[in-house]
Image (cartoon, rainbow, N blue to C red; front, side, top):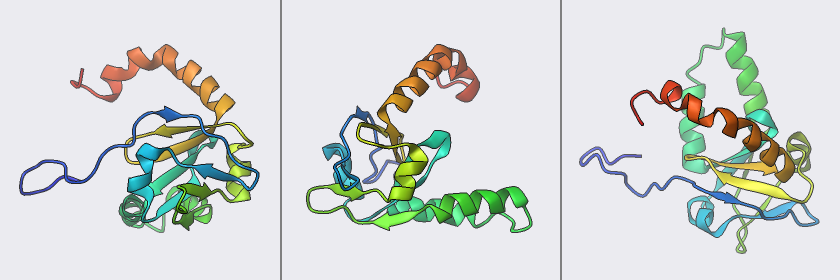
Length: 156
């Protein structure tokens, strides 16, 4: 969200870090304090890849939706993606304590029970089952240094 007149970043701060809160008995998650301001006015939680949940600030979700809807309706792959992505989407405003109620269908999709990992992923937050996150991270760390130049040419 760059300010076009200066090229500087406006009020956007990327979501960063890993946090390990617990879900309460009602399936609510207390959002990390660092994330609350950006999510306080509204968010969308939906299915992510690798069986995690994606949490977008409403403005980012609207930007993504606009891009997605540009895909041709004649593309089966685009229709399939849109159906899975949007059918699981749930919009919400966190309560005064910064809690997010995660619908049971989304908890089931991501295998969330009690212990979760909440990670900052730049423009979104991801919610993982804690054990699934640790397994995924351990697997990815092996190839992390090998892929930097391939994924981000010239950045390092």
